[in-house]
Length: 287
Image (cartoon, rainbow, N blue to C red; front, side, top):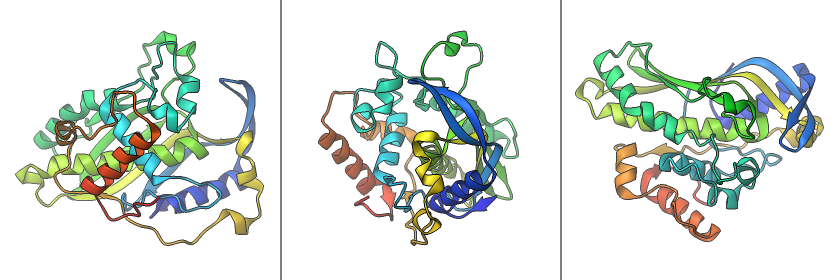
């Protein structure tokens, strides 16, 4: 399935789960639960700038997605700041206040290698960054196991494509934020490559999101069974585009990451506003 906007994809997945999902008993950190699930699900976006969810039932925030992006960029797995905004991070943190699902350390580890691979061999199929380390046996006994397995970049017909592969994706929390953050990473990789003469005219291609299990927990089933007129929207979308030249190294040099210091929620959102003002073109700065 191909979509233009994240909002369109979210509403398509609500419809898909509603009409084709299966009931599965599962567990969460708080105990037994149930989900409605579809397996082997793929969504492709042909324009990775439309990261806003306008659906009123979902009540998503672009600012939160950008905050999560800034947290990943910091490579800091501690949750004491991000957890002030989204308490789920505190719920799944270990005794030291850290989680495995800040993908920043894994992505950064493979970032320069991916750039080098694509500049040497633009048609390469090896520009892959692993996130889930299957050798870590302790992941079977901890609360937070990464849902992302790996990401891959491909260049075809002078377009950069990104594929984000998941073992598991919760439609309400995981799907929306993972895709928004993934699209920002895709834009940033595009900026990195455009610094090279051979990629001077490189364009952005498709962002594809694959998940083995796409599901929605019973705590959010009201989103499935609400009347259709309450579930779907046709609101126009705004683009959120990283400015040319915005790279991981530049953001680290500018210090425009989520602060490692203990700061207030007000200070957290002031940093997000500043990030959007400096580095993003378009979008609605009030959301």
